[in-house]
Length: 280
Ligand code: FES
Image (cartoon, rainbow, N blue to C red):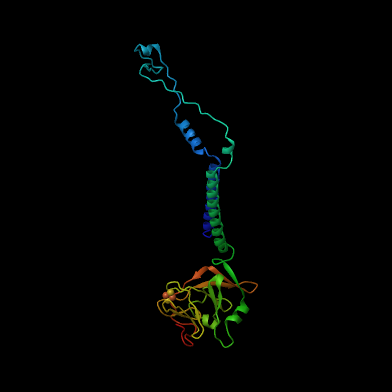
């Protein structure tokens, strides 16, 4: 529902742009639109005449409950001039054609309408992937067995797979590492694979992988995490965040990028770090 809200707002913006464009276009086609609007407003403001009954009794100073008595001093009351009739005439040939002003008005209205329509389309295009499989949705990373073979070298070292659309590193976490760790049973490990959110939990830098040390090391302020994202050192307040993952009936590794799991600093580390020199 929250994903659809920005799209609805963008659609409203496009409709508003279309309405503004239509109004501007109609006004550019009607050079007298302002005079017409003023004439209608003046007609609406003119009070209608109220019939007044003047009786002979009232004129003589007697009361008559059934009528309203008004004494009219014909010398003091000025006669109202009847409104001058509005003259209409046929437009000339020149007026029927496109004047420079109307051309400029139409050009400006067209450019404004095109700009707003383009902005609305760009907004929709930007937001659409959230609904149709981009970050925020479930992302199919590929066959689980093939991914594990890619990220776990035969000598036991790790080679993370980065998935840009999921903003995630996929790393191995074998069963004996999961057992007894804080990740046991929290749906962030399946088929011995984990999907770590790329963002440093300190101030949001993207954390690169350091192959020599076999860990993630943030160049911004020096936070360090081991290969399964457990906090090791630096100002980061917790482990790297993880996504909920799962393997479906076709053995596809699915990353739910709409479900981010935050965990506190690991006390018991599941894997060893560092295994070589640091990168920062
Ligand atoms: S943003 Fe990574 S340590 Fe500060």
